[in-house]
Length: 369
Ligand SMILES: Cc1ncc(COP(=O)(O)O)c(C=O)c1O
Image 1 (cartoon, rainbow, N blue to C red):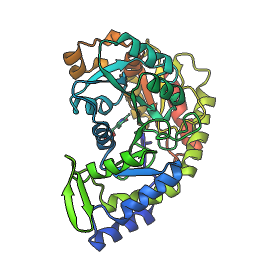
Image 2 (tube, helix red, strand yellow; image 1 turned 90 degrees about the vertical axis):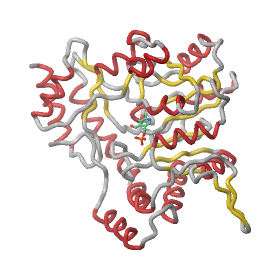
Image 3 (cartoon, rainbow, N blue to C red; image 1 turned 180 degrees about the vertical axis):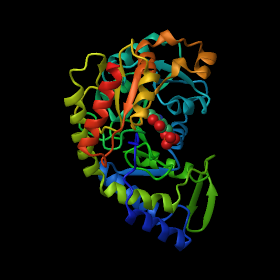
């Protein structure tokens, strides 16, 4: 079976995890700090805070903004629900925004249109999502955020290594949040990180992930209502080997993506993702024509030994958001179409060119049947 995703974990990484387990130093310590430093170096950003998941990263980022209760946050309609769930969990409201049909992410025009259509709401922040590693036009959106005095959060759960307008996520936004779930390009089992250029926010995030604790040489105090979102040492050491090999992983993914393009480019009943500069290719999601039964394609691919999957969700189609806000499936047509017809194909550095050719061939066969 060709799996959808497979982490780049080597025997030497496993050995290091075992050594940490044997050492007995299990909770956040030197390996977490080392991984933070590696991520700072990799992304060329000054501050990184490791946490227990991408959702925890988003939650802490939202908490750190201290938005007044009842404020609204703009969130793309096409994303994983965690992007909006954290907004809901800090007692704020979610305003959805449709995405571009070719890049699957929001555009500056769409964001500004959403702001202007909701002037009666107390909008305080924009959350953009670099979905599947696709870079959002973040420079322009950061100008819009400034113009309307809004905070800007980058959900970069899928976007380690993405370069948006020449910079890594975390440069233009107030904070960028990453996930290290096994479906992502680097994994710590579960895990996440927040990157920022703000020293002040970084200090706050580090306090918030550790119960709001503040230590001075002579006393320990709790100055914020924090949580426990600390990563373990054995998770961090697993990430350390992978981040050192990550530039190579990115190059391999890019080469494999080119093969998908070569083989599938003339196929009529599907849309391929736009090949934008700076995409880190966490996932390769194609969009099937409306006449094609995706369920059937997934089953046929499965029988051929290839795991495929749906992409992200259209939040306007999910029960929670429909019940709370009255959103309907047809409100955000692009997100709804991507939700219903998106198909993610396997993509990771360990795959061989021949396997990509086989996957593409099987897909063509399934579509022709
Ligand atoms: C866009 C997006 N945001 C947030 C998350 C949540 O990350 P995690 O699973 O690490 O909590 C995911 C996970 O798939 C995601 O794709």
